[in-house]
Length: 222
Image 1 (cartoon, helix red, strand yellow):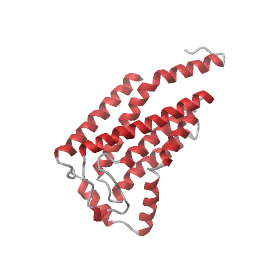
Image 2 (cartoon, helix red, strand yellow):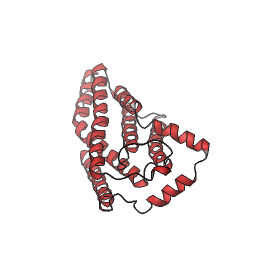
Image 3 (cartoon, one colour):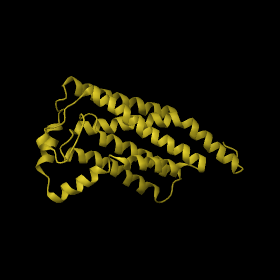
Image 4 (cartoon, helix red, strand yellow):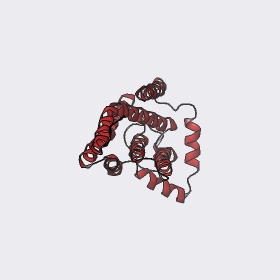
């Protein structure tokens, strides 16, 4: 499993680096496909859709993602100590991921689309998208927490809904005109890379806790 995760991390890293280089060598200019999707979004904004998208995009920033990350840890923990440790870990994954993303964003310094096209306030540079990264990281942590409780009839639908939310927040940034599509793709790739690395780092700890839990309940780990 660790080998598969490392392979996944390597693939995400390669794709993210290639996309980052493509953005950098063009001095932040739109990549192929960016302009067409941006123009379509700006031209299709009925009031109801715009209000709904603004409400959706607001869930990808501020305290809510951090509260959800803590909630993911509390849900995944097996006892009081385990819940506290898991909550601290999920919070650290989100916070450190955001810090690294901010460093990449500052280094690339990609300009956002034209201010006249914005349908919501935005700050900072454009690549990779902060909302997209935050929501994808949070969604990944929540899916991990749900899956850690065991597979039930509701596990898959819950995971699909969580991932749909994470993707929708990223897409909302394109629709609102504050990010190029490649910014959102960069946020998703970075989040996938960061979550995979976090899983690799946490794997020994998780295995140890699972083994301790089995011994406590009178079973020997296989």
